[in-house]
Image (cartoon, rainbow, N blue to C red):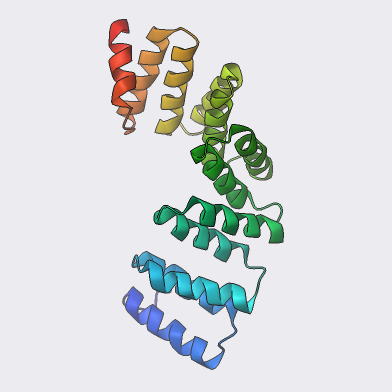
Length: 207
């Protein structure tokens, strides 16, 4: 939000005034959607983003935001569809590929997730969330060593990235090293991750 505004409502009002003058300005419509999202007005934000892509079908960020709104209401199919649109108009859009991978993980489609997440990491090697999700997808197909290597890479770059510690705990337990799994589960908790109670119960034997 620009510094000249006292609050987000002033910013929204100004954007709406500009849109009345230039109703087909995709930039203003996208900015309006983001401002409305900041107020958690998902319905109005969705309308703004839909108008944005109607004005310009190549605003990949608007498709991603629409996908996020779908995810917020539990619509995985809608989220996947919008993110596919995002990468169709910008093939190197790492965020779109990361979101596609996440949806496939939620649907239990590990191979499809891996394909998308490898693209996300390729186009943005510092996309730690995508790398952590890739570790999960590799775990799902039994590629434990690769899953561990990916999680360790995440932690090396982002030592406070709690989900990576949880991924390591799960992978090491699967490999039969309960003590190491417990160590990583504790680190996940230390960094703010809510570890699955069933996993913690299983790890009690290694204390």
